[in-house]
Amino acid sequence: MWRGPVLLDVAEVEFFQPVRTRLEELRLAAIEDRVKADLQLGRGAELVTELTTLVAEHPLREQLIGALMRALNEAGRPAEALTVYERTRQILADELGAVRRRSCPPYRGAARSDRHQTGTARRDSRAAGEPANPADQLRRP
Image (tube, rainbow, N blue to C red; front, side, top):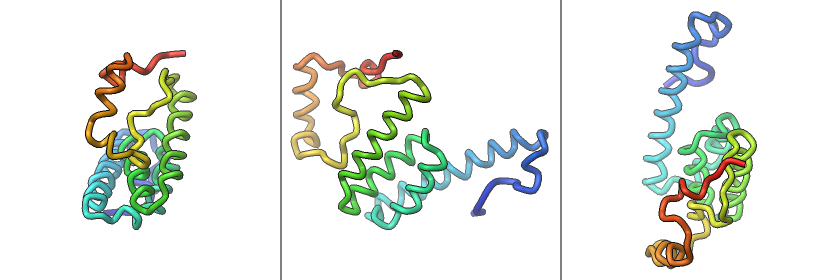
């Protein structure tokens, strides 16, 4: 796998822009697949630095953000994982106009209790009137 920007020597040539975009997307997808495998093998703590850099470069890349939160949690840094979530939520609100109506995010994996993992919380939230579909919680300002 290569490192660094795709086709850097022809970056300014408009003809190559679609190819560069597609190759960059493939490179990121391959990185996401490798990171997912590393997380499944319990190597999350080793990924924190790399994922922090990747999320800084691609702040709207959902899989990278989720992987960073999981890696931070595995590294024993759940508060930082929640900070990443809050920062991402703010970026989404600023960039895309997506704002959550409820304060409880769909991913609190870094600080989940056993109750959340068993699904009891999901049933409780539905009984409290929260929508079953997290997408229903988004609105445009």
